[in-house]
Length: 318
Image (cartoon, rainbow, N blue to C red; front, side):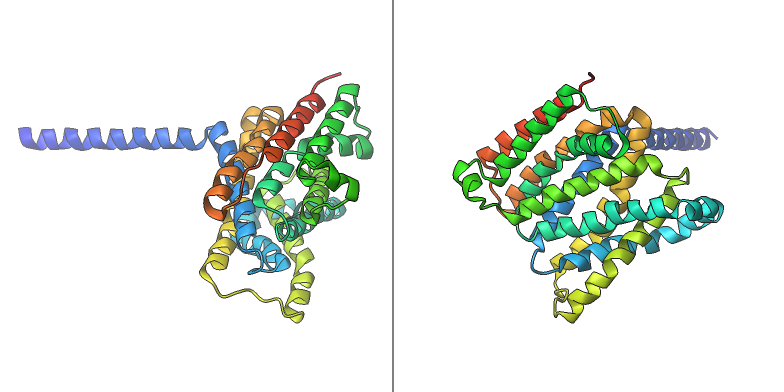
C-alpha cells in the first residue's frame, strides 16, 4: 500500500510538474518581446537565403511560391472565418486588392529582384528606412500632420541611404554610379510604406481571413510573371538549397513572422514594437558574414546610424 501511495504521489507530482512546465512554455511563447524578436529574425533569414539562392531561383518563382504555399496551408483554418467575413471582403475588395498588390505582389517580387544585385546586409539595413517612409506617405496620402522634426528625420534617414548606396564615396554620387539593387530596395521600402499606411483602411475581418486573402492576391499577382520566366527559360534549379529556401520562405517570413508580429503589436502596441525592426540588420550582419562571406563595412554602420537617427527624429511629437 505504501509503495502504491508513493507511486501515485510521484505520478501526481510528475503530472503537476508537467502542467507547470507547459504553463511556463505557453507564457514564454506569449512573451511579446520574444515574438517580435523572432519575427525580425525570420525576416532577416529571408534576406540572407534570398541572396544565397540568387541565380538559382528566379525572383518571380520564389515570390509566387512564397504566397501560394501559405494560401494552400491557411485555407482549412481560414475557411470558417471567410464564410462569416465574406460580405465585408466583397464590400472592401478594392482595398484588399491594393493591400495584396503592395504588401505581397510588388513588395515580395522587388525584394527578390533587388537581392539579385545587392547584398543581404544592404537590404536589411535599408529595411530600417520603412518607418520614415510610412510617416512621409501617411502625410501625402492621408494628410497626416508632418512636423518640422519629422522632416529633419526624413532628410537624415535619406542621407543614411545615400551613404550606403554610394558606399560612402562622394565620387559615386557625383557620377551616379549606384548599385541598382540598392535603388530597387529603396523603392521597395516606399511600396512597403504604402501598404503599412493603407492598413488603416483594412476591413475588420479575422486575421486568418485577411492573411489568406492577402496570400491569394499576392500569388495571383506574381503568377503571370512566373509563367513569363518559365517561357524565357528561367527554371528552378533542382538543388537542395533552393528547395529548403522555398520551404523556409513559405512558412516563416510569410506566416510565422506575420502572426508573431501582429500578436506582439496587440500586446505592447505599435510604437513599442517598431524598434524591433532594427534587429533585422543586426541579425543579417551576423548571418550574412557567417554563411555568405559578406563583409560588414564602415559605411553600413554609418548609414545605419543615420537612418536610426532619422527614425528617432521622425517619431518625435511636434
